[in-house]
Image 1 (tube, rainbow, N blue to C red):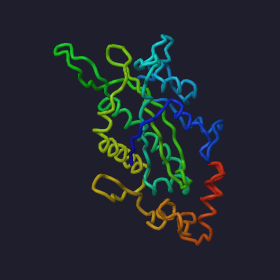
Image 2 (image 1 turned 30 degrees about the horizontal axis):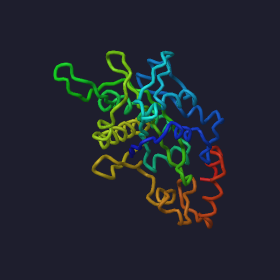
Image 3 (image 1 turned 135 degrees about the horizontal axis):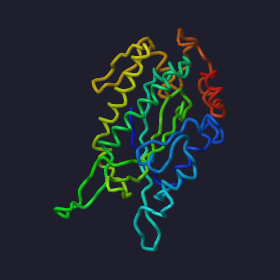
Image 4 (image 1 turned 180 degrees about the vertical axis):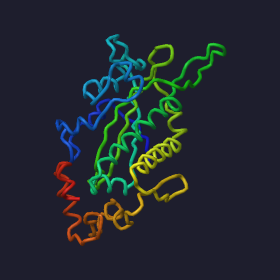
Length: 280
């Protein structure tokens, strides 16, 4: 599944580093679950785990190349007005999350990461746009194939702390064109191709899982799927819509009754990710 949301302010970006109930911002595993992406990021020498201060500067429209370049427009009071960017959230099917996080096959996490990277490569070349003046007509035109600056943050749990493998790919409102100039990014291409981007991610993920030996069961015409052999009962037991049901999969082989689903969920809100695996 893919969702696209606007980041309201550069300060909002800090939430990717705050304690989410399962990771502390200073936890090494939290830092290692983040990464820079995009040719624009590579141009700036941004690689490896995402640095919080650099990330905030990028969301503010500050190009971190020492030039002092800042994107945006002047407001009435002289302040710089700049939209921080868009959050593309790639969520693995529930059965995939269960096999990776409850079943313990961490190869699936790598398969998810590779699917996200491959999809972002496509987005960069086919959906990332900016607006430029056409030299022949003088009209503003949408120009693709922009070099993007993106930061990815992989999480293992949903807000309700169900096992949910997903990645926030934050595309900064900052692109570099073939002429080397930095400009703000248009969002039309992302929304126009949202369904296609989601399909590309699912196709990449399914192909990666197949290479690992997993069977794929298509569930919807748009390419949504689940891993073969993971029961519907297991999927529903770990879904937020089934929060009040007191059934949980045990080692993904059988179902055992759990008598306190509500208190369990409240209690794990204070538990770090390494311990969530045991609670799941």
